[in-house]
Length: 244
Ligand code: URA
Image (cartoon, rainbow, N blue to C red):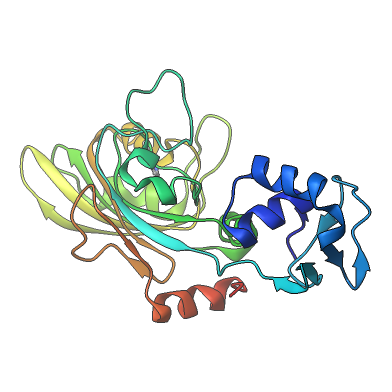
């Protein structure tokens, strides 16, 4: 269970900033009760959602976690802050959602499904290799790709400092100029898809993530975001327990 510093807990539960929560905890120390005892003013205290934190006799509860998916356009950086990036994915979310964190990253030039949440426990679980969450991509590569050339991607191949795991792949379309591959893999190493296709002699032209575990990008417009539905949250919780 996630542990919060008391000021972070109060801030989230009361919808105020941490600074305001600090002031409140200092000025109105005796208005707070933790598990039935008057708060002693220790601002280093950590609590979980199971602890009973009360303010003036009313229990403070953490709001439910928020989950949104974004259809990331090309040219946006997936980190939360980067002094060298002119465009961050978080800029595509409204101000009130800019505290959410992306579940993993997509390269600056990659498009498609990026999940955001404030549930850091689920982020950790969804990214853990043991969970083997499948990521589905449409990969457009330069040149006419043959099934034989695709074999190393499917069977696993030696990269510079690791061997890639087997993946599922199917050639969807080919022409002289380009080929489109549907690819499902559980690994997500930095630039992995770009590096693998470069290595088999067909550099990536365009990369779109269309699926992440049970989630689908669907018809969400590029640059747009939406909340997950209850059904999607339920499906996610089959992979990792979801706090409500
Ligand atoms: N693999 C890549 O090479 N890039 C991405 O953005 C995602 C997977």
